[in-house]
Length: 248
Image (cartoon, rainbow, N blue to C red; front, side, top):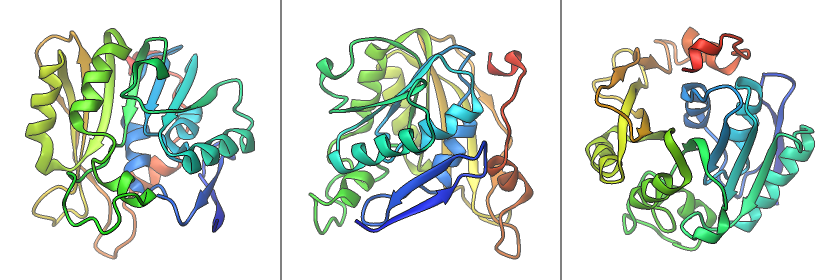
């Protein structure tokens, strides 16, 4: 293992990462900030990897409990270490298992987050059994898997937030509706203000939700000098909000 410890720049949280596994990027930080669970929510993070999103959410929301589920044992063990490192055992837990299997989780949740594989299976994978391939390609988790399980795991009016590639947005909306999840919020992320097309999309949907979607302001990751914009720096250093109304 090739380990390093990163400072998450909030509440003195740290994260152990293994360079041979999938390390978190800006998309995980964006998703953790985009997520808006209500106070005292039961939260599930699907495909939690090294636990980055549950660890970040522990500082950003007032949850009852945050559960991560991870199919790869190496990443699961790393997530456990990160929970211990940050003394989050009372708030965060991680399950080793396949979210597609009903027996892995025996309760419902108010909110789900998911940073899924972006690429379809069979698109240039050299080693389909490698941890990086599983994280990047839909070998063990497809959009249909995510939303079919979300329909079962969410309480009525519960929500799911996802980060993905914009070229798959139509498929995301179709699959959400297929499983009675109505898109409610959308935010586009551009690499720079001059970029012609967005590089990421953040989507939130509600189970059994009514019609109507809210568009958040576009986010731009880098300025003209290649540095993070003020908005992105703010996300990395954002403190816990106290206003319950902002989580409605």
